[in-house]
Image 1 (cartoon, one colour):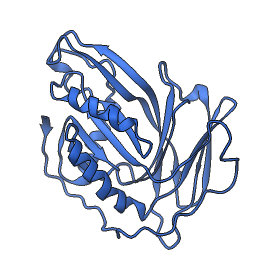
Image 2 (cartoon, rainbow, N blue to C red):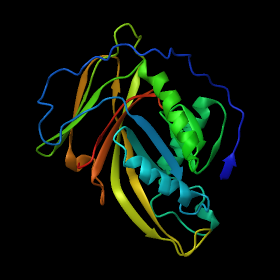
Image 3 (tube, helix red, strand yellow):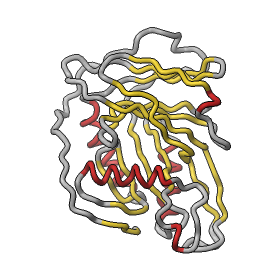
Length: 260
């Protein structure tokens, strides 16, 4: 595990009950059985911060592939750029993802930034190669975010992506949230010719090619429509939407469209 920094920061997450209230369905704005229509139930969101220049990362990358095959998990690979100076520039990395990892560390207050690092449901970080810890953390944090779960549906209409969110759960105070759109490549294989992984060919799954805020949620149902040409990137073929409290807090709703 390659550690970047541990900085003492102060932050706290409010305590949440583990008892989940009844889920509020989405408004019946479209036929849920229509092609490419996705009506979500709670899913675990696993974000892997990885690097082609990190010798500890290939095992975590392989584990993410297994997690990405599960219907109850949205597993995302977010390659970071801060190890590029070691001799190999990550061909998939974005400074946006390094910034997101730092934002998580600041929100948690522990300052822990390393690769391979997994952040589960926006709440807890664990070693990205430790399958047992990841599964236990998915179960534990899943109970936490279930109290605030917001259903999300994704669909395609002609050349548009339609994002529909439900309201806050009855009796649960709504916390303003950011609606993030992740544009994804299902699989990318990279031969690495320098650095710590020299000579290896690594396949990365659910690689985020761009991550952008597309709206602010205030507890009420909302619909966002985006022209496909405005967000798709070369090589991308999937989309995911995350509803996250604040900028780097708990993820209370998520959906994945496997063909976008």
